[in-house]
Image (cartoon, rainbow, N blue to C red; front, top):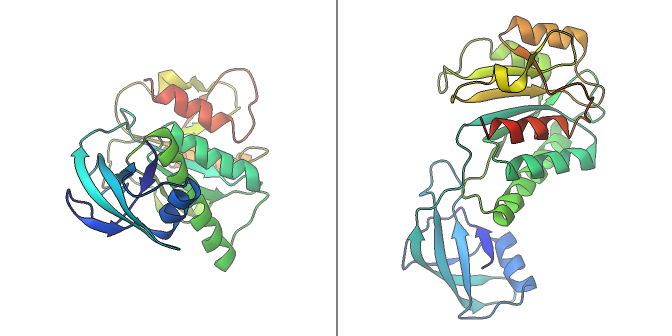
Length: 247
């Protein structure tokens, strides 16, 4: 059954108009009145789970549905993993956001590192953020997640590390891990042993600079390794996410 993100208030029996993006998708699929769909709110403050819904009316640019039964099903990872990702080139960053969402990431913070090819400021940054959030929503619709990860504003890497020097008030026990090629680092699964949340820092193409790594370590990030092979900037954090969801 087709699934759609609907941030409006959802309650059994309510009749609502789908948001524009979902309405366009319903029309593209050529659904008709009486057809069933699945809706999910997606927000951390929403009802969770997913709702049955039935198409009531197909307008020229709008779709009205009736919300049906709620199912308290969640498909989240067993631990919250917050990805701090050095911004990569356009299509690679899109791919990273999409696949990280499928793998269950809790949030994504794009970071402008010294070696980031893509530099974002002002209106361009706002458009990219909206685009990446839409990529995350589409990935949730496809993979069955009912919680959409937040894609935070793009920030300077060094500024983010300094601003978050102490433990997070929301997650004081969170591990801080840094993907590094330096010698003597601990394997990821050893460093991530336990069940608590993780803040995971990974660099852009070319990796983090020596100064950026040193700053991260100074502020509590433990260097970790995925093994002897050098993975691409968009592959490495996904491999780490896949491993961490199994810890």
